[in-house]
Amino acid sequence: YPGADKTSLMFTLPHKPGSLYNIIAKFSALGLNLAKLESRPIPGRDFEFMFYFDMDASINSKEVISLLSELDNSPEKFVYLGSYSEA
Image 1 (tube, rainbow, N blue to C red):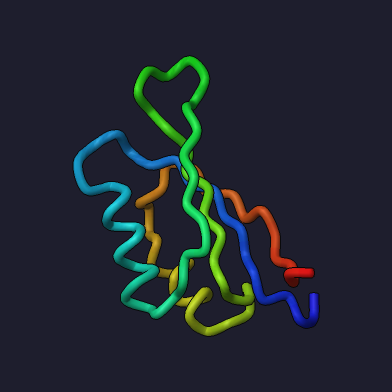
Image 2: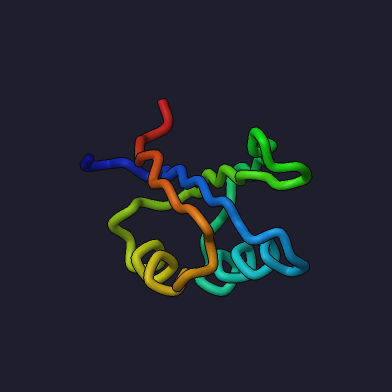
């Protein structure tokens, strides 16, 4: 979508120390601004969470493309929720 400057992603991460930090560090290293980070419990999995990220960037930006290529197998699950422009 032309002009879409916000992107939303969802990850589930391994339940081990540093998992969330490692993802957030990738955003920072690429200069991507996280506008929102939210966690929600995963039904049926005690003390495990899914994380929703909103960032100020287009899915077509070189930084976002680089982020997605750097993720390797870090997230257990990854969902691209969409890109949009803020009204």
